[in-house]
Amino acid sequence: MARWKGVFNKQGIIGLDLGSYTIKAAQVEPTRTGWRLVQVAQCPTPPDAIRDGVIVQPEEVAEAIRRLLRDNAFRASAAVTAIAGAPVIVRQVTLPKMTEAMLRKTIRYEASKYVSTSVEDSYIGFEILGDVERAPAENEQPESAEKQMQVLLVVAPREMVDAQIRTLELAGLEALAIEVEAFSLFRALFEINRVAMEKLQERPVALVDIGASCTNLYIVSNEGFFLTRNIPIAGDAFTQTVQATLHCSWSEGEKFKHTVDFRQLLKRRSTRSRASVSAEDSEGGSESASGQDEAVLRALQGHVDELLREIRRSLHYYQSQFPEGSPQGQVGSLIITGGSSRLGGFAEYASARLGLEVEPGDPFNNPDFDTAHISAEALQMFTPVLGIAVGLAVREAFAERQRHAA
Image 1 (cartoon, helix red, strand yellow):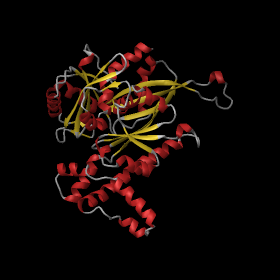
Image 2 (cartoon, rainbow, N blue to C red):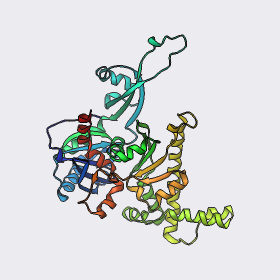
Image 3 (cartoon, rainbow, N blue to C red):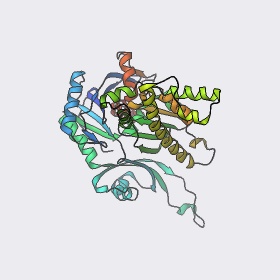
């Protein structure tokens, strides 16, 4: 995505994940052998200040950022943020081979072939992934066949990007870069983690980030991104369901949804299987759990099952893009992040329904990451929601390391 450079102290950079429900901040510094977590914190996002990924109240969000940094003793003069959602388009496209300079001149024309939105109202970024081998057509000489290349194309609404820049300026921070959330999440969970990258050599992995307003699904391999998808089923829908079920306030619904345990559904299924009960009883599903817990669990199950069906459809679509039995088309596991990934027993329930290993995304499960001076309680609370912020926080230092390695 677009990048804004300036003179800055690398220890004064923070990664800011500006969500519609919470704002997460992380500060990370490079060490000789890896990374050190300096500070993490989060605060509520002002109500209705961010809608569909666009900051509509920059002043309120900027004030929340200022308080967050001040109250948690961050020392930062610059920030990296990210964007995501249905309006943000990330696609791999095949183009005639050309130099980066030539592509930069023609990128708007090329992008207009693949997106329905107006390129004039968008920021457009790209990364050349490499050459594409193409077999010559019938009666075509190999030397005359047009050479092609694979390009990662990113298109984002101008208003979305400009609103983030404006917000950071109001908060007294320099906007170093604004990138796509998928890239920062991949960086935090894989690129800076040599052990995770080695595992990724074997099979692709699905990343599922369950936020407040939407769930973002990414399928990645050691070669990069194969599929990105936005699913409009996430934490807000879960909270609304609890509200409707219990006739309670939003804040009460937020708290109560985290008290249910989806493992209860798996226990019931196992019990029914052993007892061979009738199909009618299996649909009823009320046993030892009762009252509010039972009502909320049943109501939430419908939304969670719908979300898992959409994830399954995406996995099947991805698999259909490869020859039958191809290892490249077989997603080996699913990693979940985001606030609503913390629903009790969600990982176990999703694993049983999808037939895949499902595990929480932990950017600090990394032999090269030093978190020694951050309390275990804080890490346990923040880990599921910090992937994007950590990926943003290390962006500049990681890019510099890559340049030196090259």
